[in-house]
Length: 340
Image (tube, rainbow, N blue to C red; front, side):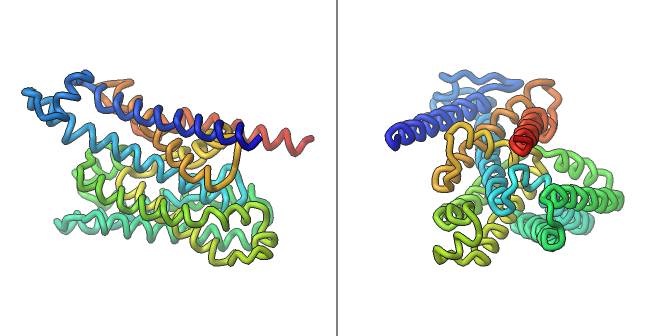
């Protein structure tokens, strides 16, 4: 049995890794200007004479594809942490209003600083998004003390998201016309406009958070069996919950700061990965969720760029098309289980 399970894990990881590499190559090659694999190889070797294709590859497509890979994995990992924290399969940054809170504070910072001709640094955006994510998460945690049913808590999270979105829209009315266009495009969710500097910063933040989450694999395994069981094994449940909240908020903040609010990935990707691997063990699910989220976002970004080219669809529109049916399937499945 252990041998079969190990083979399934290896095969699933290889499948996800291959899908990630394939989607990465397709995102780099396919677009309004097609770049073939031989041309891409020549550009990477530095032997290509086509400077236009080289600039498209290095300055536009590669940073964008790598951003989708990193941020997609971070988003799925944040969703997995929240689902583990709340013991609820449809918990996620978007549903609980965490993404909307981060979006609100980023919009405030952008309108305030851009209106005074001040350049907004990436550190400022991540810090503002983290503050907003923590604010929304704090409200959700306060609500969880007085709400017994998890479904009511999810509704409360949705309402918090609506409030934050309303505040964001109010703030945008005070922005200049040029800033409004930028804020509107960002609020729809997009991986466009990424630079190598952005990729470097988001990769460093995500790698640090990923390593910290991986260190929590054993206590999370015990936590999933019940808080009392985890406490009996010597796990500091309160400290574990604080760490999960901070890490999920940091990952959500990094995503919103760079790509805006991206919906349904944090909810759908962990469940698809769980079905693929046939396990919920954190030591397997943590890297698997990251890979699964990367594949999900790379695939959706490929469609967002090319379905209506040269126009571009908001990434949240595409992720909703593929992610929402997964969430509906989860709800239907839980309903049948309760009926039985």
